[in-house]
Image (cartoon, rainbow, N blue to C red; front, side, top):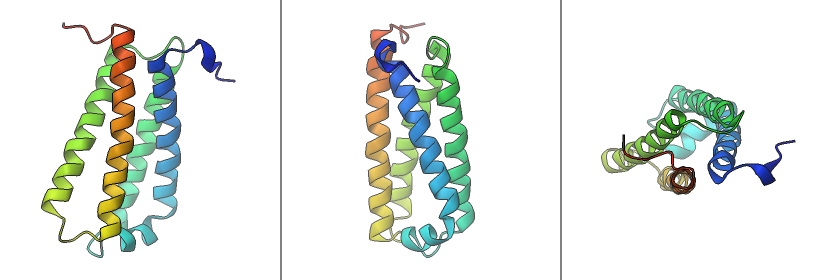
Length: 136
């Protein structure tokens, strides 16, 4: 189906990120209302739904980029930049809104950060192996 044995580390990471993002985005859209109560009483379900929709787009981007020979240098840079921005944004939320978050909300943000950091590590390693991130 995906013939993973012949794909590069970067390509496999893009596939995994794409599939995971589609699943997570769908879950966020389906459970937006109950998740708002778990994350923060001050949070609107619309925020969770927007995050879910964004993850669906992110997942589709990764799956599309993984087709036909794997991600290009531009797609790789976009993906790595997006992962770094996710980390920065997550830290900003934890620092600025910690009093509005529940313990479960903080834990979910940290777990998501660890997952994104894993994808980021493998994308950078795969890009290095493919020599896609050479200085311009």
